[in-house]
Image (cartoon, rainbow, N blue to C red; front, side, top):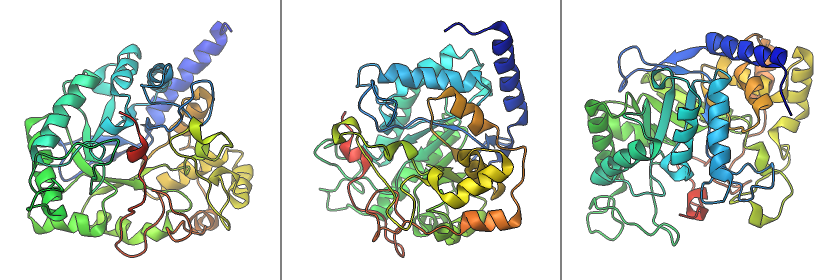
Length: 381
């Protein structure tokens, strides 16, 4: 299909508008002065294992054709006006994300690149430094804008048997200690920040107790804590969000739509993970009747309502999509305001506690962290 010149100029106009209208949040603590974080970024970690299927989206580069999809989605997002790309070394697609960034034609200094270390790779001091070097080499960049510790723990599995060289992180070592391992890892992150390899450093999936360890150790605080945040994991995280705000740590939502492409009915062999929210929740958050009613009232899509709600709470988000029409929707969510009643409806949905729904994004009770099978333990090298 050829695209008409009129259609093309409209898309370019939209891209310019999206870039101009995309708000951003200031980063504090361990961040370069004046560094800001675009409110909506592109998530790049997908679970699909079959290029022939639209959903679940395939982003893993060892599946033939999926790396090219990841590169094309990244390029499209940037050409449409998106400026933040959220990647990780455990998404198994770094060279292709780098390829998409270069193919976009957007200058590197205009792009905000996030990457993450662990948890399919070992945590620890030297391991973190070597992962940073590998991230730079695989993405072919001189620096990343934000580096995160992907998870507060890591566990070697049959598919990822590598142990850490750090005695505090090596499970077979007599000195193994989860707190000391996190602090050892964070010391390396601070060094990476001071060396300029990352313009900001932060964490992901950290509990209040994990953040408190950094405070107690007197170390520089993270700029960001990236956690799942969607209609079924929202009110349950109020204490964590309050703690982050109190310490100038920007809380960042991943899976803002609850990973809708995992709800499709496909064979298990087609995805690392399939998931539907159990009743009383809707299997797919975008089908939630109360959300659809708000969407109809504003003449927007349920995804746009969700992303606007998250933004209105002061939270940036990283929706993943390889669909250009969805990308345009996702970056155009700042031109309307939800009423206080609508905001209350969005915050009032049932929460996805782990005793109801045993998957890696469930809400743990108390200070537990999820210990079931993690997606990276399923990921092939």
